[in-house]
Length: 274
Ligand SMILES: Cc1cc2nc3c(=O)[nH]c(=O)nc-3n(C[C@H](O)[C@H](O)[C@H](O)COP(=O)(O)OP(=O)(O)OC[C@H]3O[C@@H](n4cnc5c(N)ncnc54)[C@H](O)[C@@H]3O)c2cc1C
Ligand code: FES
Image (cartoon, rainbow, N blue to C red; front, side, top):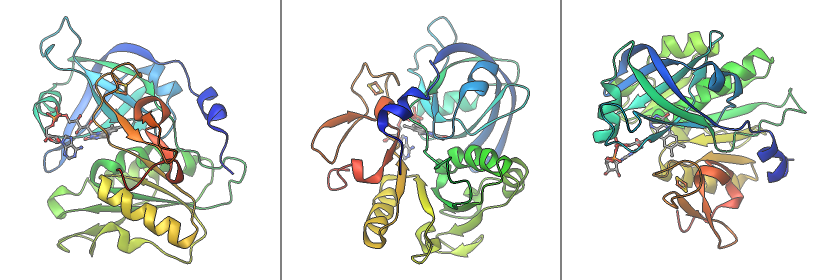
């Protein structure tokens, strides 16, 4: 059983705002960067599924930019916070141009983490990731592997050039993902949902574009599987004040993805409205 929402909320650390130095940055796929920031407070407190708002701050070059949400992709023993960043528009392009030694503003950790059923470490977990939806699962797989928990990582991209360095994923999580590409140029050909096993009893965790999450929700409903999803809504503040991130709950309420999510048990959402 999932913890009550209140228990999940209680496990979260109070978010902090930190000006953090970029320790390393490298291109790991087409339009995609892996960045590591020195941010010990957030690294120590973050849980898999949580995110940070990443920006420049009002007193810095690039201050026109509202911060953007990014999953915590990994935390290192030296207080590093890893971010997998793919460019879409002006914000992510500006953030991708950050150079080693420059500083960015991180606010976090934010949001509701994945619930992994910590009382039953022998139960398996399957993580289904589309694109940069892989980021929270790198963090989760690394954490769970350290606890001896089996994690199946299934990762889909459009084509080989978009695939995030599998060697680095292996180094960070201790095992490489099962890979799907839509055109078959790397891994198995097809959508990542082709990796779903109807007979498996494992908890499903999903992260990626909304059509993927919708397919996962339909699969989970049909096969009676437990599913949590992390939704990728646009976010203005990340802390519940701007209403920019609302999604429709299954009970008809509008819920703020930044504080009540971004991870939701699938049955809490109205999939017809997503
Ligand atoms: C909780 C959460 C976690 C996230 N984690 C990550 C992460 O780990 N790595 C990562 O790269 N991104 C992640 N994102 C998405 C990221 O925040 C957006 O890509 C970013 O805010 C886009 O800003 P922008 O200024 O570049 O684009 P904008 O100028 O805001 O948008 C430019 C255009 O691109 C479209 N667009 C924006 N974002 C996306 C997207 N994600 N997919 C498809 N089209 C898009 C917009 O609709 C618009 O048409 C996450 C989002 C959320 C809510
Ligand atoms: S991002 Fe502002 S309320 Fe959720």
